[in-house]
Length: 340
Image (cartoon, rainbow, N blue to C red; front, side, top):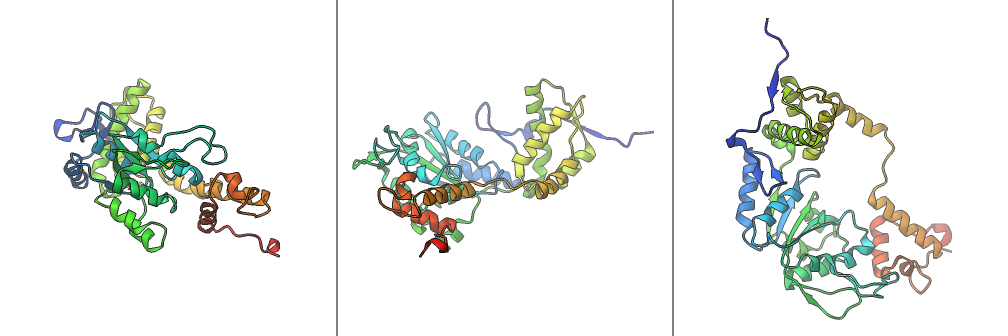
């Protein structure tokens, strides 16, 4: 009697299904119509110096696609500099992007060149551009329009030759309508938009991605993984993957760790379990929470005085207008009891 337990082998994908290679390490995996369209758009824009704006949910591989644009361009032998606008404290964003001179603000004991100067003649990737502080946006617009940066604390401008690729998981046109993003900057960034599809819209790529990640992690862990149960693969194709490719990659890494033989042992139960666990686990502090706590602490130390030598703006190393903007954005107001 034939066994009801079926497996699929995990060989090297046939020639027609080879991942798109960007260099020796980075692979863009997928042959779905959605990914073929994305790659055709990249092939169109890569040889130019046009600004590219990548739209897509978290975990869809926007940085990998930005690298593909860079490596297919004439700038491929020059720097590719990544800036995560969501991970960088807003108070430091301007100096990190454009540089600073010694003494530009409290605590600036040395001069520092910014990321744009580091990326000169190459490409800068501004990830989560929708998180960029409103007061920094005019300076970014100037770089895009004039190719010049001005370090904090310096009257001089520095010429830079940088291609900009930005990415966001937000609707920037909605951010413009809400007053959180400059209209002129949006138009300047939106020269060549590319929408990266979520994994649930390219399910036919899932088997190829599973095979790719299984082979990748098996090599690293010196394991021999050759097959995956067919019902497991079917379950992976049915799942919606809210975390997209990053979630799939993490699951397959875990599966390779758990596998003791040549068959990939995927913990399918963990998929629903993760969603349930997210309700029960303590809420992690976001960057916005941390920013709010930091600003409130400085305001309390300064008795809610914003400006002046003993004000919170000085202790935070930012301008008064910047602090006032951050307070409005984060909903920070002086306690009523202290307003008398």
